[in-house]
Length: 284
Image 1: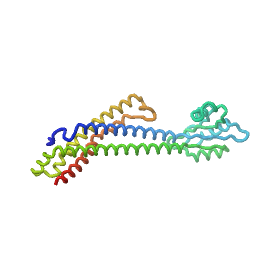
Image 2 (image 1 turned 60 degrees about the vertical axis):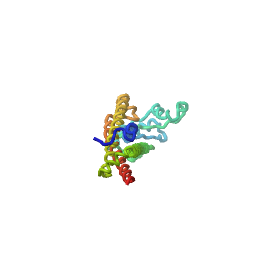
Image 3 (image 1 turned 60 degrees about the horizontal axis):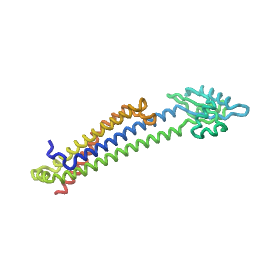
Image 4 (image 1 turned 90 degrees about the vertical axis):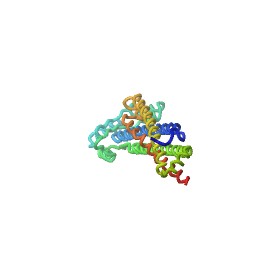
């Protein structure tokens, strides 16, 4: 049983503040996990696709060149499927960029959609070599630029999530520091009595450590449970792909929130100890 009276140093507002901080940190963690999952999913999908643009030679139509390129690529090791796109399919790809007004008069490129083997995909060099050997004038886009951008975005999201966690932990630690100082000021008479009866600085500090660690653990549990409920609601409302395919929340993301009470208690324990020991030294 703690010697400190209840609600010493404004414990109620401290619990509320840490609970809100933990709730926000948990939501940030779920969002980061979902965004990272989506980014890596896009990168994997881009890694199994390639696009080839064919330029017909003299005496050859674009459709004939595209058909010949598709046939050539279909026989390359590491290619699962190669299909020449008709004009309508090519226009559908260009429509979001140029609109409908000029599409009828625009010279649409002759494209081949290539689906690569997931286990051993053919490289852009291999595809280009095969096309050149077949006498085709073509350029290969293996989407490596887009994959790089997606992977960099995933790394940035992870870095932002870590920064958010560190800022939240810092804010919680600052709140505990303030509450510890306020608690020690409010319990000055009790601290004097304990010191006169032979209690060491560490023993007195432990009283505040234990109190605020328990409070932080309780607040962390409240914040984590609230975030779990919010994440579960988003998962249920979003169907099989979470909120949207761009942010696929998974049930496993909820497990990421379980260490929140322990982390909150650890931050409070460390902050309260250093603050209490510093306060006891200042009294001597």
